[in-house]
Image 1 (spheres, one colour):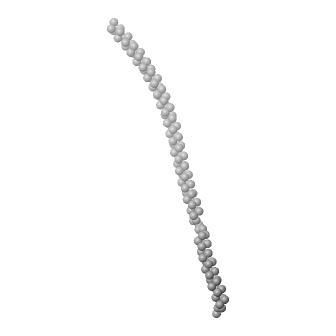
Image 2: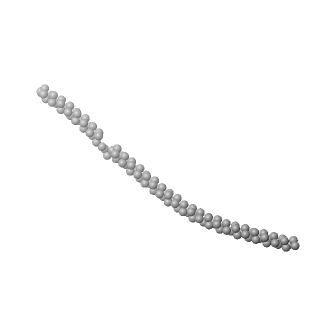
Image 3: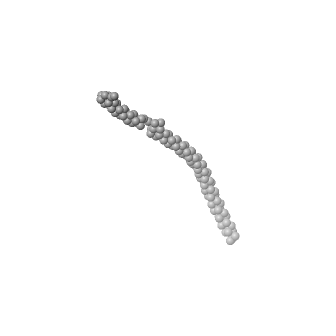
Length: 114
């Protein structure tokens, strides 16, 4: 048989056990599992970093392609300007030849008329 004192002590112990159980449950809920938010955020950042590295790699390759195209364009442009200069010289020579031929034709026409 229990005495009145032991009943109160048992009630206090039960209340304390309940309180400690609740506190333990809260502590366990707060304890971080393996996939915590920090770890998830870190994994997402790592994935984004990988994606950015890949994107940067593709962009570097594209810049290199564009630089090659620019060099080729500059070479072609230089050749084109050289050809234009040659054509201008040929045009002026042709004009001189035409003027000389016109003068010669004019002289021949005068001779025929006389």
